[in-house]
Image (cartoon, rainbow, N blue to C red; front, side):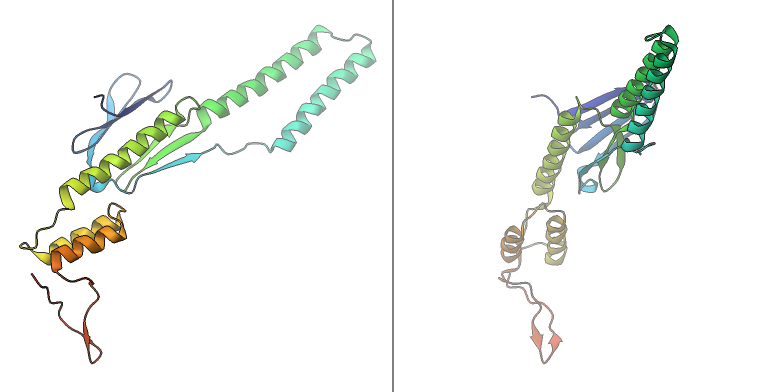
Amino acid sequence: MSIPQFSQTHIFRGSSLLLLRQHGLYVSQRRRNGTAWLETEIPYEELLPVELEFAAPVELLPSWLRLVLYSGVMLVSWFSNYRLHEPGTPDNIVAVVILMLTLGGLWLARRYFGRTATLATNRIRLSLHDRPGQRAALETFTEALRLRAHAYLREEYAQVNPLGPIELQLHRLHWLHNLDVLSEPELRILSTRLTGRPSLEPLKLMGMDLETPYLN
């Protein structure tokens, strides 16, 4: 069975590797020469919640202004050719080609270098590049990370023992519920199994909260 992982290489910033290990998320980010500037393993207990955020680069020029500039350059080029009765002169052709290459370069730079994807966790925020060909793989890895963290916390912390310290275990169950590891019905079932009470609402007498009695 292959270990879920996600890797990415950038021409300027080096490489990133995310790997799901037995007890946590391994993160390695290296410079172009191979030296690591970030290498750590984050325990699953400290990861949740896990979110994936996408951000586009700031527009340097509004689309309508780019269209106006492009149209203006084309009109100037056409008018110059018309007045000189020399359509398609080399100078004007070169100007149009340079303009098209510049616009194409800006589009490629925005598409492949300006867009960012951030893997946000409770412990760390990892900035990656949002490449169209890798977005599905990154989303799949993020979901696998979330499921692995949930499964790990269930296995390690969702067990209850009525003969053990009850307050500590109740606190742990509420912690799992706040992380969406346990649903509301699961929290009630485990709490009842632990305390013997169908409800954890404090008992009141003459407007005062009584110390919570447990039936075990």
